[in-house]
Length: 297
Ligand SMILES: Cc1cc2nc3c(=O)[nH]c(=O)nc-3n(C[C@H](O)[C@H](O)[C@H](O)COP(=O)(O)OP(=O)(O)OC[C@H]3O[C@@H](n4cnc5c(N)ncnc54)[C@H](O)[C@@H]3O)c2cc1C
Picture 1 (cartoon, protein in one colour):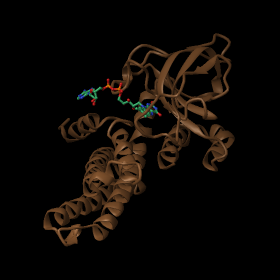
Picture 2 (cartoon, helix red, strand yellow; picture 1 turned 90 degrees about the vertical axis):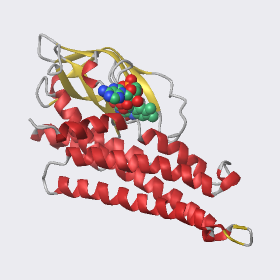
Picture 3 (tube, protein in one colour; picture 1 turned 90 degrees about the horizontal axis):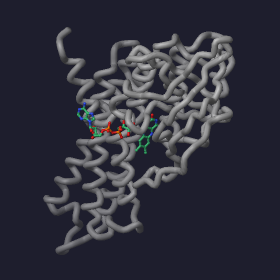
Picture 4 (cartoon, protein in one colour; picture 1 turned 180 degrees about the horizontal axis):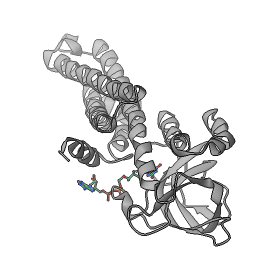
C-alpha cells in the first residue's frame, strides 16, 4: 500500500510541478483526493536505467488535435488498473526529444500485458503497456515538447523520498519483529537478546534504521524548504533501501528457522526489500546521481 501511494504521488508530480493552471484545475483535485489512481510510465524493455534510450513514439497530428502514441512500455506499477499514466514518449530524436503526457488509461489502442510474476509486491500489479496508434489529446501534453526527461527526473527526485520512506518503514517492521522474538526466545538458559552476539546484531539493525530515517527526513526537509535536494534524495534512497535489504535479511537470521517460514512476516519483508533497491533508479544509478552532484562543473 505504501508503494502504491508513493507511485500514485510520483504519477501526479508532472502535472503538479509542470502543468498549466487549466490542466491542474481540470485533473489535479481528483488525483489528489485519490478518486483517480495514477501510473508512471517511463521504462521500456530496452530502456530502464538508460531512460533516454526510450523509443515509444508520440507523433503530433497535423490538425493539432493530439498525438498518436505507438510503442511498448514496461514495468508499469498499476498497469491496466490506473485511471491515468504519466507517459513519457518520443516527439523527436535525442534526449531533448522526449515529452510527457497525462494519458488516460482508457485510450483506444492502449492494451496491457499480463501482470509480471514477481518475488514480492503482490498487492500491486506490474505490467507492460502496448500503444497501438492511440490518440492522446493535445491538451494532455504536460510541460513543453522535449521537456519530458527533465520532468521525469524531477518526479523521480521526489519519488525517491517516498521509496526511502517505504524502505525505512519496512526495515522498522523487520526490526520490531526481530526484537519481539529475541525478547521471548530462549537458548542456553537465557533470552537470545541477552547473548551478546545477537544483541549486537539487533543494535546494528536499530542504528541502521535510525540512520536511514534521519537521512530521508533531512532530504525531505531540504525539499520542503525549496533547497536543492536531488543528491540527498539519491543518498536517502540508497541508504534506506540498502538498510531495508540488510535489516530484513538479519531479521530472518534472528528468528532462525522460523524466520525462513511463512508463519512469521520477516521472510516477506526480505522479499519486499529487494525491489526497493531496483525501482525508481537502481542503487547503482543513485551512486551515479550522487557522484555527478559532487563533480565540479
Ligand atoms: C516491480 C517493478 C516495478 C516497477 N515499476 C515501474 C514503474 O511504475 N514505472 C517505470 O517507469 N518503471 C518501473 N520499473 C522499472 C525499473 O525502474 C527498472 O527496472 C530499473 O530502472 C532498472 O532498469 P532495467 O530493469 O532495465 O535494468 P538495466 O538498466 O538493464 O540495469 C541492469 C543492471 O545494470 C546496472 N547498470 C545499468 N547502467 C549502469 C551504469 N551506468 N552504471 C552502473 N551500473 C549500471 C543496473 O544498476 C542493474 O544492476 C519497475 C520495475 C520493477 C521490477
